[in-house]
Structures are given as structure tokens and as C-alpha cells.
Length: 307
Ligand SMILES: [Zn+2]
Image (cartoon, rainbow, N blue to C red; front, side, top):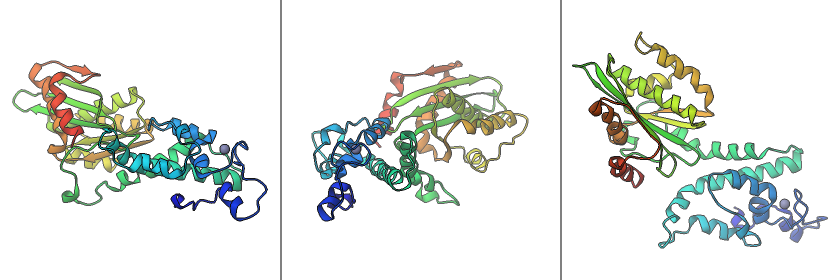
């Protein structure tokens, strides 16, 4: 819509009707073009700065908004980030919308919105897709068959458990990745007295959420191939048997640390990286925590990030 100068900024209005000033009603220093209103006004700049897009809006000052849209959407063969920008565009569009909304709320209702609120609104809209994708009944066929990156602003933790019924030993693995598929944190934790596969899977999720709290993550997706466990968590059933109840109670209590926490079932194909991480402790009879990826994990991370 704004591509055709369809947003009634003052600069456009003043060309059509006689209003007192074409100056931006928020800063009163520059004409309120669409670019100024959405990108380069001081208030708008703060929102872009807060976003994780890592973009500066000043270079677009005085330029038509079309240039900005093209910056995000036109593929450039020479530029490795161009695909990533296209992927981010829904978030960019939501930010623009949220900034315009805030401008109107301030002008017409006289209610200023904090920068953080403007940003959160955009993030919320941008992630509606992720939420509605969650299976309500059993759309098994529509689930992705490969690991997918989380949306911008979200962190995804894949978890897995490896349990040996003959020895009662096992291990729990988790890996946190950001919207670029880059690893943030991972662990493989050995234990020599586990009583079931289910306990092992629940404890893997427990470790992941505990770690997410330490990392102060606010928007988290927990992905696991343990369907029964995930189904229970999605229904807020935080009750287990003697071996799992305490862990489930913790998970229930810890939910409030997050703005959004989503539990998601995926088949094993999508969870292979967490699987090999969990295996590590079982094979080495030891626990390990990583903040940078060990060399042997590289091929799995590359495969996921490029899928
Ligand atoms: Zn302004």
C-alpha cells in the first residue's frame, strides 16, 4: 500500500489538501514522508535499532520507500545475505505496520507507545504463523520433514534422550539455535540411573528450559521427537509418576520466565542433531557443555542450516 504513496503522511496530505504543516508531527523537524515516518524519524529509528535485523535506516533518508522495500526483497546473486533478507521481510513488514500504528495512536488518541511495545507488537504479529502452524489435531503429513530455523527473534531448542534399558544408563542432549541456524549452546548429560525412555526425554527438556532461563531467552520453541511427552506439555499436564513428576512441576513453574514458550513435536529426521548430541554422553560416559560447536557437530549444523 505505501508503495503507491497510499499512507496519508502529512507530506502527501499537504500536496492534496491544505493542512498547516507538512512537518512530522512527532519530531517537528522534517517533512513527514513515508520514509521519514516509518524509518528515519528518531522514534522509528529506535524501533529498528531494537530489532535484531541489524539494519541502519539513515542511508534511506530522502529516498523513496520503494528503495527500502527493494533492499529487502530483490535477490542479489552476489550477496550471500540477500536470501536471508527476503526471509526476514514478514518481520520487516510487521515492524513498519507497528510503527505506523504507534504514530497514529500517538496523534489521534494521544497515547505514546514505548519503543519496546512497538517492537513486541511487530514480533507478535510476525510469529502468528509459527503459532498457528502448531498441530491442533493430527496434520502429520503437513509437518516439515527437515529441521527448520526459528523465526527472527525466536530461539529453538531441540532435545533428545538416549536410554539403554539393559544398563539403566542414558543421556540427555539439547542444542539451542537462533534464526540463522547458528548454535548458541549445547549439552550432552550422562546419567547412570534412568528408569525409562520417557523419563530421559522429559529430563532433556527440563535441562533445556533450565538453560534457556540462564540465557534469558524470552521466545523459545522446544522441539522434540517424543510425541507423548510433547502432547502432555502442550496440554499443560505437568503431572508425572515418581520419576518424572518433579521435573514436570519445574517445567510448569518455569513457563512464566518466558514471553512465549512453544512445545513442538517433530519426527526424528528433524531432530537428528539433538540425537547425535545426546548420544555423545552415552558413548563417553561423561557430560559435556558447549558454547561453540565441536568439530564433529559441524556437518550436522551445516546440513540443518542449509535445509
Ligand atoms: Zn519525525
